[in-house]
Image (cartoon, rainbow, N blue to C red; front, side):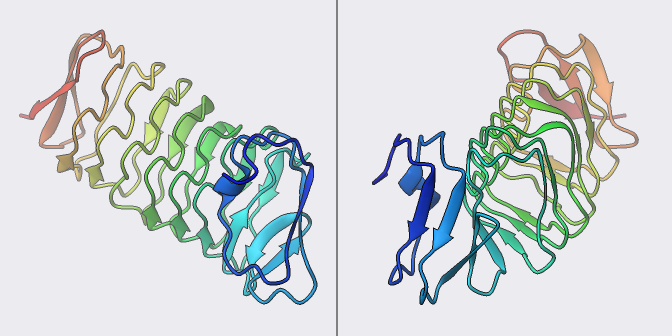
Length: 231
């Protein structure tokens, strides 16, 4: 948190810096460009975005970069921890060949509308899209089998979910997603964590999956929604 809540617009990674955490700039809402000093052996900047030298990991996307769409370069396999956290202008991302989303990768970001996770994404960290309040729908790819802790918690505009290849819902995955009123679980859904759909105003009554051994008992209010065996 060395530069917490500063108003700097450009930050240059020093020549000898070999480790960098986006938390250094926690609370900054003005950063629009990242640079890397000549001779640095660990990082590279391209169009103001910070990557590891081999460009396999996207380390940090400037929070106030003036673009609404972004396509991840094809060589990038990993989105680093909190790399897109709290972006102010970005509305959509194409993931290209990304396989891993770090912890809080898009935490409280400005992403909006439909979010599509490609089949190539196989791993995601906790809080990956937590508090992205403008996402309206989620489509999981076939690669991710288990959603992490609080993956979409407090995404208050999500109305529809395509579970893709998910087999397990991690704890609090869709907790406090207040626009969800109907949930259909796929037949492969076998396990779930606590408070997966907590604080939802689901339509009263039983909501069953398409052949899933799980059903969801809709309860309005701030209570957990109870999974029960299907028929």
